[in-house]
Length: 130
Image (cartoon, rainbow, N blue to C red):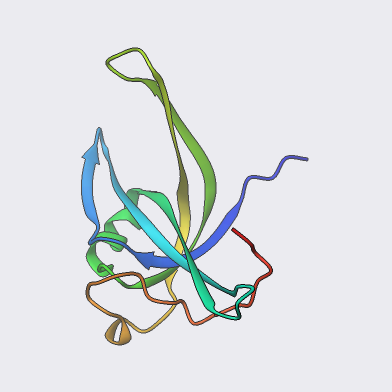
């Protein structure tokens, strides 16, 4: 059995822009997720992961109306990859989450309106070493 499902929380890195593609609409965006760990010197370190997202159809329209930069979201979707050749003939690719479901993870009035990604409130100690 093959499973392609991803669950991700992060802060929206920019206000969403709704774009018409044929007869449908899409929002392209990016979420930033902060992970924390303590290094060998007992100092707190942060790793930020950025993942691109695409939301299609009615969910995209709702997202564009309600979402603002800096707000934290939970998304569920599938991992997709676009592949193409650039003008010089180089093969290129981009991996993203095709969002199937999304929800706010904090009240809209509590979220920052701009600025860098904020911790998602789930600070973890990790054995991660760079």
